[in-house]
Length: 74
Image (cartoon, rainbow, N blue to C red; front, side):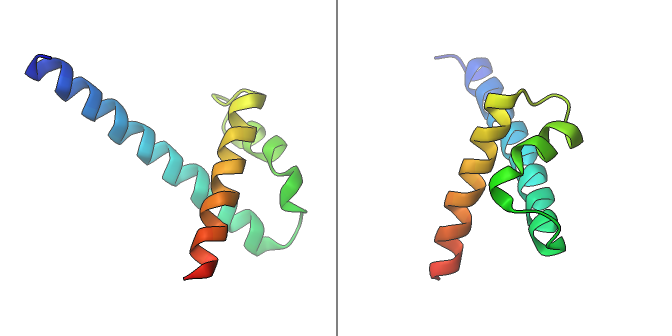
């Protein structure tokens, strides 16, 4: 693997993590608002972030729920 390929992968991973952080922050704020049941939050993600298709929004929500459960244990 070349240095260029490694660098591109790292940049893609960093960008993905930044987007994930943005999605998770939005979900944290949505949860804190108390306005909705978080099981229905995927449609809010889709509206707020048009780049997410439904399956991706559901995946982000599931990841957030999993990470939230882990954070709550600590």
